[in-house]
Image 1 (cartoon, one colour):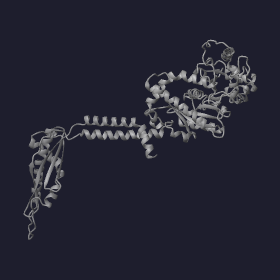
Image 2 (cartoon, rainbow, N blue to C red):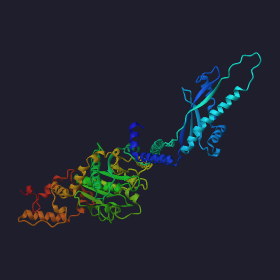
Image 3 (spheres, rainbow, N blue to C red):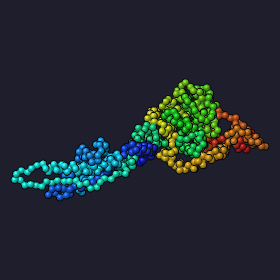
Image 4 (tube, one colour):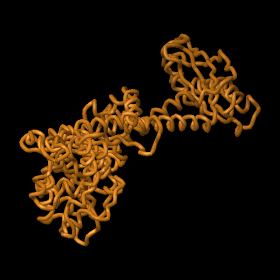
Length: 556
C-alpha cells in the first residue's frame, strides 16, 4: 500500500476515525468523572549532621538520610502521626512518600489523600514523625557499642531531620487530570478507528473503487453511473440525472472505439447477480445511441424475468420467444418507441426452455439479420444464477459488464469472469453503477465543481426536448406525422400536396413489420440509416417522388 492509497483509505474511512475519536474522548471524560479526586500536600525538612567529624549537609549525611526515607510509610510513623493529631489510626487515609531533593540537603514529604484536610494532616505529621523515628534510631545506634580497651575513640556520626516548611491545604485536586485523560482517550479512540478502517479494508469483499475493476475483470471502465432517485425533484437528483445521462454518453463513445479491427453492432449487457442495474443500463444506453441518430434495437434477452417492455411502457405479451418458436414473424414483434430511432423487441411469453431457445441457431440467424439495420443492445440475464448470458455471449460482438458499487462482491465478479472466459466471451468494458457522487475518488470531483452547469442543463432538457425531436425530423427528412399522432396539416392545392399527404398516411399506417420482414431478402431491401441520423440515397430518392409515384428525374 502506497502513501496515496493510505490517504485515500483514510478519506473513505473518516467516519470511523471521527467516531473513534469522539468515543475515545467521551471515555476519557467519563473516566475522569468517575475517578475519585486526590489532593496532594507537601512538607519539607533540613538534613543536619551530628558528631565531631560530620558537617551539616555533607554527602555522608545526605546518603544516610536517604536510607531513612522508606520509613515514612511504616506503621511507626503512622502511629506517631495519629498520636500527634489525636485521631484514630483508621482515619489516616492516604499514601505517604519521602525523598531527598536532588542536589540539596532537603527532605520532601508528600501526602496524597481523598480530601484536603487529610492530606494536610498527613504531610505535616509525617515530617515530624519521621524526624522523631530517625532520632530514636540514631540515639540507639550511638549508645549501643563500647570500644575495646586501648582503642581510639572515634566520634559517632549521626543525622537529624529538622522540620522547616509546613504543608498548606490544597485547594484543587492533583488527580485525576481531566485534560490528559480526555486527550489519551481521544488518541486511543483514533487508533482503534484506524485499526477498524484497516481491518475493514482487509476484510471487505465488495467492489468499492474503480481501481479494483482492472485487476478483477481485466477490462477498463466505460463509465460511472451515479446513484439517483428517478422520481426525485430536488436539486441533487436533478444534477445526478444529468450526470448519469452524460455517463451513458461516455459509455456510448467507449463502445464505438472498443474495437479497432471489427465494427461492434451487437452488445450484450449483463451483470453477476440480480439488482445491479443491468436493465436500466441497457435502456439508458439504447436511448443515447438512438439520440445520436443510430437505429437501435433493444432485445429483452431475459426470458425468465423480462423488464424491458415495462421500462419502455410497451406491450410485451408477444416478442422474442414467439419469434424463435416460429409462432410469428419478426416484424409484428418489434415495437417502436417515441424515439424514431429506438425500437424494442420484448421477451414475450416465458418459455419452459429459455437457455435452449437463446442458444439456438434461430436466435443466431435472427441477430445476423437484424444487425444489418440496427445497433442491437441485448438485456441479458445475470451470469451466475443461469447460463443464458453465457450462451448468448457466443453470438454477440462483445458484452458490457455492470457492477454495482458497494453491492457486488469481488468473488462473484471473479466467478462470473471465469465463466465468461471459459467460452471466450469478449468483455468490452465495465459500467460501475450506483456510484456515490460524494466520493471524488470515483471520478465525480469534476461534476461537483460544475454542478451549476449540469443543473442548468437538466432544466433545459424538457424545454429543448421538442426542438431536439424537430431537429431529428429535419435531419432524417421525415414528416412530423411519423413521430406523433396529430392530424396532418391542412391540404394545399396541387399534385405535390396530394403526394405529401399520401406519404403521411402511408407513414402513419406503416408498422414496424414493413421495416423488419421475416425473410432475409426483405431485410436486405429495407432502407438503412447511417450513424449520422440521415437515410441512405434510395430513401431520399423515394421521398422526392411526385404524386404519381414516379421519380421526377426519370419522368423528365
